[in-house]
Length: 186
Image (tube, rainbow, N blue to C red; front, side):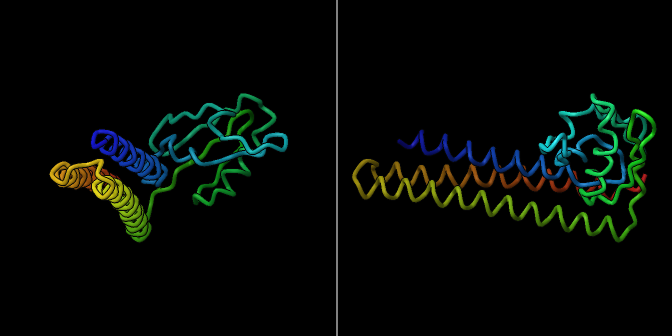
């Protein structure tokens, strides 16, 4: 039973960390990156379709993203979706492609983005602590029911705490890397 609880707990921690890293990838850093457009959905003949399923997204240089739709008639819909996403970007329809210049971030905007990243980090840690609470409850109920010996329960609680510390450290490392990336002006 202990192995199952630990496996499920670690799996949940991994999902939380993975989600956090995906969300960090969507934060603008002043540098062009395809990940900025991951959450954008385009109205494609009445169905909201993820942009990356409708077009190839290329980064020819650090200040420009070029989006080439597979269906050339969708350039205007893609432009509209990018503007609606409120990323602070102004796409330009250039024939069969959509060009998105990435403006430099101001110092104030960089600080705001760091605050957003820190809030996302804290949300991730709250989620991880919630998973820890659930795993601890399963072990404690197992002990009460007589399925788990007391020493095994305590060993399990310690392992759960150690796993949480490891994943919390990974979360902080991801935050520090993103903060450095956001604050890097060059």
